[in-house]
Length: 271
Image (cartoon, rainbow, N blue to C red):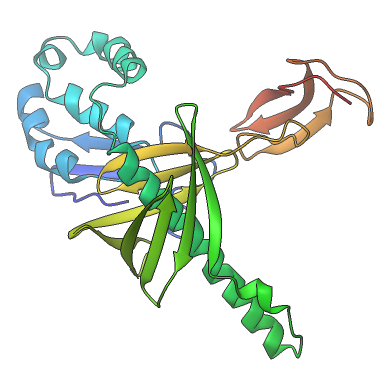
């Protein structure tokens, strides 16, 4: 999270011990303040800091919508209508900022493959240090990545050809990509002569890929027999007995998230 403050503009954010957004931070992950002699001066004072503000773990749409309305003419005239207008804009997904779909697929598949290959190598190395020898297949440098975006499934074969070189293949066509890992888990990718700074965050049911300041969401294939909570929280109670039959939409548990009780429901009928 990057925010450049000054003597008249400052902010507070929900940041965890590791430096990222706190795991219990909700949609209001921070507050920004600006001072001026009047409303217009305060708004103009905050213009540059807000334009420079970015967060790779928060919704880019939230930030862009906030900046868009902070500089809109009706915001200066009537602050009471801002919440309803801003909520409507988020629903409409305006202003939009999605990256190219195929570029997102390439970046997402490479991030998943890179992370998996690196984790396998670390696990193999750790076992060797303990005197254990894992099968050689553990160090595979080629794997298949499935990504789902807007109900379309993309299957990409990713192979590591060198320390920083990967080859991606999908539907009979291939692409060579250079990947360099940066200090904060980002990857600098070189694709067809163009460079992109990318980041991927894996969540319970999806991957969030950030390319520059644009975000693309890929869903994971869902197994209806595996029940997961979409948010981190405290399990309060199960609402059905172990082994009982459930129907689609039936609540099976309650969890506490941000001091609120949320009901979890099954997506398919079964035992």
